[in-house]
Image 1: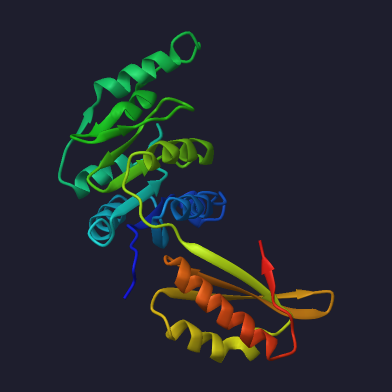
Image 2: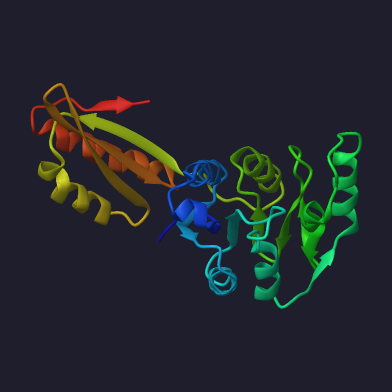
Length: 252
């Protein structure tokens, strides 16, 4: 039985430009790291196209499966920015001009010489009842409706938005991890590592092979929400490595 718990989350990247390879996603890895640091377990990351029905159905499904859904992309001023309307439809609410979002946009563009035209005003349209997510970079807010947090796709803006979100949502127990390196191929380690993992429901063990200067080796990562479980499993791993005549190295 797992002693500690974590809220669960899914990251949803929305955009044809990512699926085509034209834009390289920089958000999933960063979000995964931040959620891990805040005791939230990312159980899935998914990339979907800019298709209204696909977004609607995906949001409806995923929001029922985890504690939090984080999305990036599709809330800008262009014709293919359809995430806002799709999320609104997923929760059966209308999209309305949000007065606070409008105020922020007016303040941001005031004195810049850039027209707050109809396209940019679209970024003040928010699903009814949603809470705004602050955007300290370019003012146009994201929004939170039920357990879905809708953010910009631009990494710098998305990161700033997530920083604010994480200060205000429930986190859980932080994962403890111990990394061990050895000059042994993972095929020689696999069975016993599985045995160690199976001996304690509180732990996860990952194997990551490497090849350096003609030497084959493996980095083994023991993870757990329980510090004692993690340390016990790591000790078993180190003792197993020693049976090969090798000295395990702890990676900081």
